[in-house]
Amino acid sequence: MKKKQFFFVLMAVMLVMVAGCAPGTVAQINTPVPNAQAGTPAPNGQIDVPGVSIQINVPGPNPLVNTADVHDRVAGILLGIWHGIISPVTLVVSFINPNMQMYEVHNDGSQYNLGFLFGVALVFAILGAFVGSRRR
Image 1 (cartoon, rainbow, N blue to C red):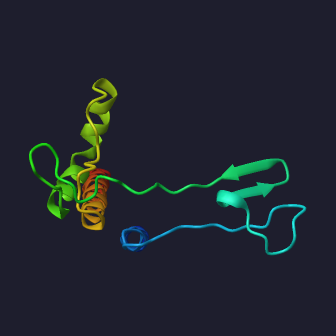
Image 2 (cartoon, rainbow, N blue to C red):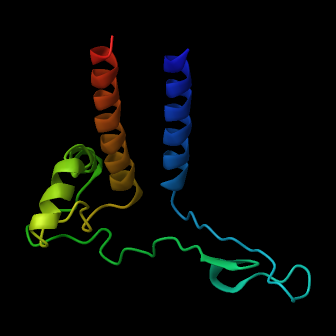
Image 3 (cartoon, rainbow, N blue to C red):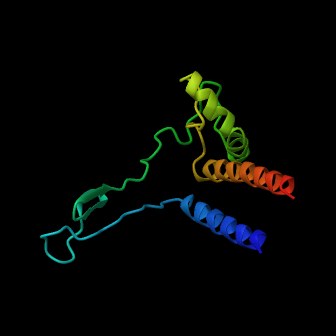
């Protein structure tokens, strides 16, 4: 039963990630501002609840998409998968060496993003299967 629930949640998360990689995806939240006319959207996705103000933002565009790096390469889906797989290691190394980055900015856009997220999901799926098999 737990495996079915885990699989369902994993597939739902992957579906949301794939939908988020679609070209032209824009997230915008419009909520009414207190003391304003009904239907007036809040500026910049601001949510105002009495006593709390939350600012919700999405990442901006990458100006280096489809531009080659110093070695004349643009990262595609396969490099995205590889960078996603090694992302836990590069995260730890980036704390030691600030020049190390987890994510290649010289990429081909949504295909690299999909590969990166697939690689990260693959790491967690393998770790989950390994830990689950050790508990029995």
